[in-house]
Length: 174
Image (cartoon, rainbow, N blue to C red):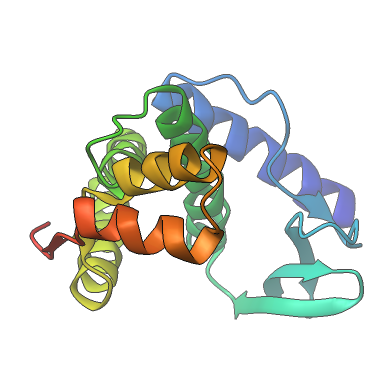
């Protein structure tokens, strides 16, 4: 049963990657046992699917369901987030909050699989932005802190000066 489960999940995840136009270079989870480095692992026990994230013996997240499709969503939520963040780093716009690009990229990837998945993640992103608004000056402010530190300013003084030059721009529009 466990081998059938594993083969089924691996096959389905590879198909979902194909729908996104991505190669599954590294499977986004392991089976049955944690690696200990926060790589998600999947277990199937007593008719239930478990999606678990743990690091160095501490469990940070455990989701349990009897719905196989929900398990696939959890796997692809984390996988697309990782892909989106990697993509954002390589396409960064310094005058924009990095989440603008990464959130949009994740939603676009999930929409290739299932629009309802993209809608669900969009709602989560909107809630995050409402609680923690975008700040398009952040990247510029961080760059300025670095410049001032190189000129000999202490971190606190460099931060104060940089934040005066690039004040926080709270934008909760998403």
